[in-house]
Length: 367
Image (cartoon, rainbow, N blue to C red; front, side, top):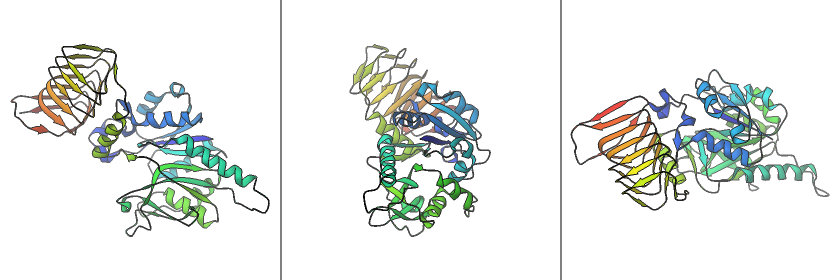
């Protein structure tokens, strides 16, 4: 089995961060979002991975390289214009060949183990290939991961039959047939190639993967459904990105590798190698990245301070600082996402919280 990871797209919902950086490389819990998916793929025993890239191709390739750091063999597939998920499958045909594959959205995070999903798909296919006496099963062509959501109008939504097989898929329906949304992981065999070649662009001009899967269903193919166990987050906006950061920090264990002087570290706190915490209070779960300095400050729960940051005379809580940023005399910052090389200062202190979403190479003076 191979994997196809989608890492293109402009990331318009995370601007201004994504004006200068690939959305899949924005860190949560001090690790790029894309890396969590690659690690999950490697843990599932998959080695050959195609990464679909767009205008941020150079940055993604610089971060991932040949994939050897993850135990993978990576091939890059250039998508000049983001024309839909099914279009990504269409242009990756040479890489995928006739193999089964997992399609994984590079800006999604989920708690469920990918290995289990892969094993179940392979087991169902093997069962159909070697049926019991008197059975005449059809080999499944696909398996999709679904999640119960409160607002199914925002997603591709599935309708299942009594056996739990997909009978209908609708993209962003006004009247949803269920609350089961497509959760960003798909398993396919070679038959998906005929499907993506047969469908037409949707009203928004894209080749929708929901239309391709519906084509399989209409052609009499079996499409299995798996209901998500645990959480799933599309990190394409600020609020869900901070929620993903919170959920991942919930799972960390205390680890102190850097220097701590005259400070109080409370709970599950990671101080990475080369970091310094001086005359400060850090309440976990929180991470202080390698080479960062925290002095005379408070770092509150669910904060991820990236590499090489400097925080002095400030308070930071429930926020992500991507890296190499400076927060000096800034008062209290919460619920915020700061890009790389950001500078936040305050020329006159006031007892109020500040909420920020700041792009790379910015300077913010809070008067």
